[in-house]
Length: 165
Ligand SMILES: CC(C)(COP(=O)(O)OP(=O)(O)OC[C@H]1O[C@@H](n2cnc3c(N)ncnc32)[C@H](O)[C@@H]1OP(=O)(O)O)[C@@H](O)C(=O)NCCC(=O)NCCS
Image 1 (cartoon, rainbow, N blue to C red):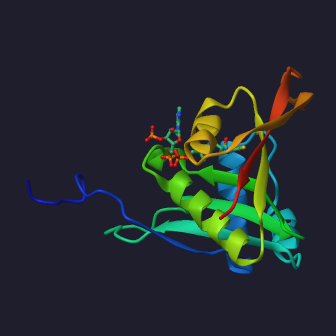
Image 2: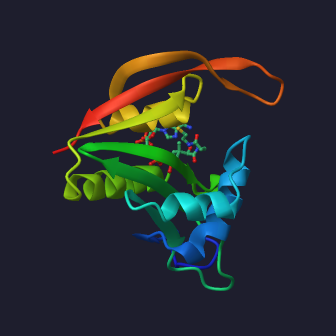
């Protein structure tokens, strides 16, 4: 079948996050999380010496430039790396972008001397837990009643860990 704008499979590039990305990153974060972080918060996190991030952009859009497709923000300090936040646009979910962003974050952490990576995830977030398990993360601890949703309902945070090699 001929490739048209309606059938074309989106393709993405993963690039280091820069200060110029923070407004778009904050916008996507606000779409995917109940408690949004503003662009100033992203900028100050990104500018910390141990922090880094990646963004995913579609490379084969024909007519209009789609919004940012995903991002990850992480840091590495003294051998321990941490995912601060990650999100993928819901229009391109389950296309392997979360996996690619996590791989980029893990590779960069390892290059900076990271020996292990940690993250926290709501124990009800099946998509994220599925992604992290597929990447080899395992439960390392639990923080009961750590998150609260807009109605004040509490849920636990799982702490997950993966050795980097
Ligand atoms: C979690 C998130 C980043 C996953 O991104 P994604 O690009 O859709 O994930 P991928 O396509 O790379 O999926 C990789 C694996 O994760 C798991 N996964 C992803 N989405 C899933 C879903 N909805 N349900 C169950 N497992 C899922 C699967 O194991 C999947 O592998 P498979 O497709 O071969 O079965 C995305 O759902 C998101 O942005 N969620 C909102 C923000 C969020 O919760 N961030 C994490 C906070 S800790």
